[in-house]
Structures are given as structure tokens and as C-alpha cells.
Amino acid sequence: MTFETNATIGATLTRLSLGTVLLAHGLLKVMVFTVPGTVAFFESLGLPAIAAYLTIFAELAGGTAILLGLYTRLAALLSIPLLLGSVWAHAGNGWLFSAEGGGWEFPALLVALAVAVAIQGGGAFALRRLPVIDGFIPEALRV
Image 1 (cartoon, rainbow, N blue to C red):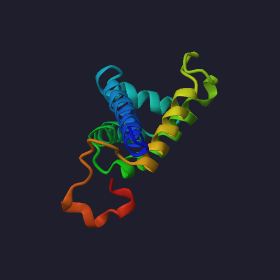
Image 2 (image 1 turned 90 degrees about the vertical axis):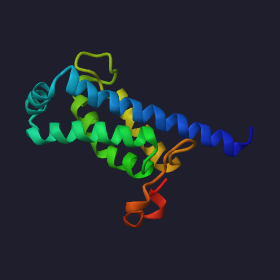
Image 3 (image 1 turned 30 degrees about the horizontal axis):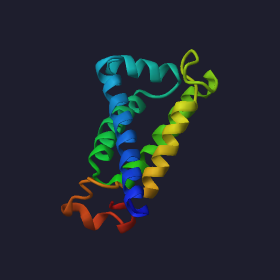
Image 4 (image 1 turned 60 degrees about the vertical axis):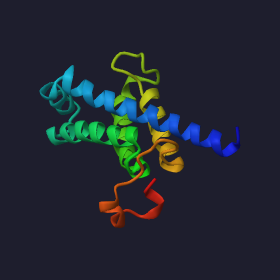
């Protein structure tokens, strides 16, 4: 295997990992915690209800886009503020995610994954981009 092949495989695995986790967390908020339950949790943190809806949308849409490899770099960049918000929400619970309420280690790892995906791009088997809106996205963010 060449370095280029290894890098492509690594980028693909990183993209699939981040996309899967984001999509799974979005589905968890809808199917397990329910939308009203997620809204109530966000409000208990002092956040407005709209933040819960935006988070659910971002995790579902962003996770799907990253998983498929559609505007991968852009989707990963847009997920970083969401993931930093998750680090903030869990910061008071300690470091380990196994702590009561979940610590900040796992959200911080997701931030690192999002940065890696934003740098590396989609890797192999990414759908890459939709030609219809190609002109609106800078070349560096297209893959």
C-alpha cells in the first residue's frame, strides 16, 4: 500500500466514524429522549428551545452528509461549534464520559475528529459534491 492509499483509507474511516456518531446522537435525541425531552434538557442547561431543535437538525443532517461524503469538509467545519457546545454542556461533570451526566472527554474527541475530517476531506467512497450548488462552496471545502 502506498502512503496515499493509507491516507485515503484513514480519511474514510475518520469520516465514517464521525458521521455515524453524529447521526446516532441525532436519532437518540429524537427516538429515545424524544424532541420534547431534548428541549426540556436544553432548557435545564439555560439554553433556549431553538438550540435543541438546531442541535437535532445539525446532528441528523450533518451526520448524514459526513457519512455520505457530501460537502464533507464544510459539514465537519459546521459541526465544530455544535461539538464545542457539547464539551461545554459536559464540562461540569468531570473528564470521563462514564461520570454521572457524562464528562467532556468524548465530546472533545468528537471535536478532534471533526477537525481531522475538515482537514483530510472525505477520503474514498465520498459522494463529494452536488454540481447544482458547486459554485457557492469554495474549492477547499468541496471534498
